[in-house]
Length: 263
Image (cartoon, rainbow, N blue to C red):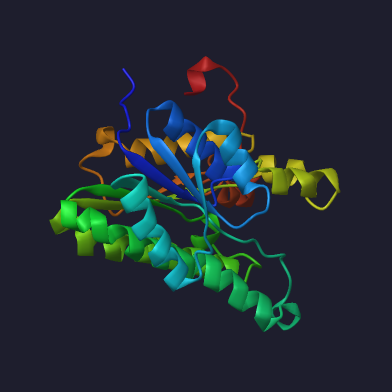
């Protein structure tokens, strides 16, 4: 039997991509969903699904503090926070990466995750219960030509561990999910434009496919819910085996089993 998610669940960046998939699954599991987002279409997305929408820039500390207080007051105690708001970065050389872009990525992906976690943790700590799931990335676990995004996501993984230890004595769990190459609308658009090669993405994963947003949502909802009651401080890669496959290229690449006896 699937565990129910009770109470209010806040999803930052919940109007598209991974955040939307998380919000939809949380709603199906019984949560009262609130989406914090800045995109123009976010309010319509939430209205169509019967969710509460609040405009919120996670990089704006005062705005997120106000949003957290308003949600607690008008919607109810926040039991789950999913930090999914983020911005991407094109893979350019350091000299070609404007510091304004570097600052934007760090402001949203790193600082924004921390700001939201702190704002919503206050009620959780006071009630001595709650779950926070941060969306990190496999980019934070390996070297990549993403000189703002990868370090920012590595910081998300680190802060997940730090905050799990900080708030664990108050009964608040903090975990991270690191998606691999996920077929979000943004990535699919890049594929359609010929900017990304699907075969390069799938060929470097043990399962030979891309991650779907719902794959991430299932991991997030598991960590957020009661089935993971003893789990805190972890970073869970959901990457179709991308982390384990590339080193096999040194030996000619992944091998297809010859028969069932090769297991």
